Length: 464
Image 1: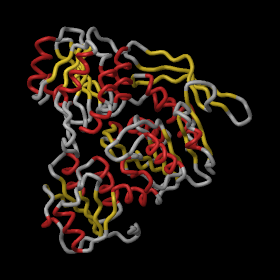
Image 2: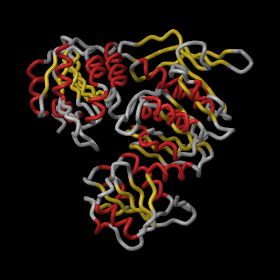
Image 3: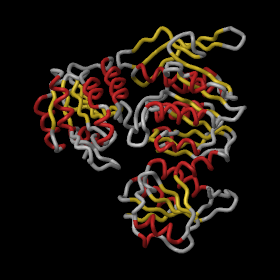
Image 4: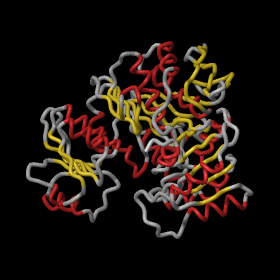
């Protein structure tokens, strides 16, 4: 594998430079004096920002983008082997690294790299850990898979002490990392276009945990089924968090305010058998975020942050873009957007919505990828049944082609068989018209999915 010498800046070209993670890595290299170029299929706020920082960005991926003087090419899993720009790089013999491999090498430049993994909750928990370190004035470097308002984007470049990053299991990319602290939030079936089954996924997380050095720390959710199979024989320190006093960190007296924000009593067990308690109040909704915050507080302790400072940081955290994000109100109707695209995430989101003030709950769901929709068809129908009305859009293909003959109409049939009021529309305009003609004051409209379904809420609110 090509090794980057960060003391000797070179010219690095990024294929897919406009991605939220790739753009962050490109900016880190720019800050280190590297020459950066890259390509993407469309212009965006992220590509414009990189151009302002000094990167050369090409729109469209063509072989002409590859010039003499490029020393290294970094690419994402979305790049096809028959991409002409990619083939030109290989033809010229230019060394390559995956996004994850570069991120792993960057991690080695920091004293305490923290990697946040799990099937769900990575962006929110990464943001919570970041907020704790920011509140403590620890000057962390942060790369997060969403827009964190307090840093004005998806990246913050700080000192070489703390590095906080998401760690995704897809294509085993997190196995290229070099963390000193890991968080494993949950392990469930997903990305079945890559993994064989849940055992294959668990094996990947086990390998991830094994990356930790002897002086490292694993923070793991004790609610994960047979979590000790993941932690068995690890040489590092293991910290658990969960629902009851079998875990090192746990919550009692859970309640919610009138906006659905969680409150609880934190319990932390000490090695000498004593126990510390503290009151925690969050400014994000849902039970799932209570457990995300337990993991973040444990990471704050490992980083040496004062407990009161960490709790204050969590109180000031209002979430990231597309995570139960209130988009606005129109004629007394509230519009919220959420990135949930897995049945477990949808259940958590709609459970949180039950504690949010509303009369009728309308859910607009855009399924994400054909393989995920087929794999979880019954689970999606079950999770969405918590809504009063469901409106389905066509499946957002992302990186896939529909070779398995699945469509949103299959999910619609499942919902109707369960007695759920549900509709399917191929065009966003038709979804918006249905909502505007039928909602009433006090109703809550939620757009849910990892694609571009958020545009529906924005159109309803007249934002674009």
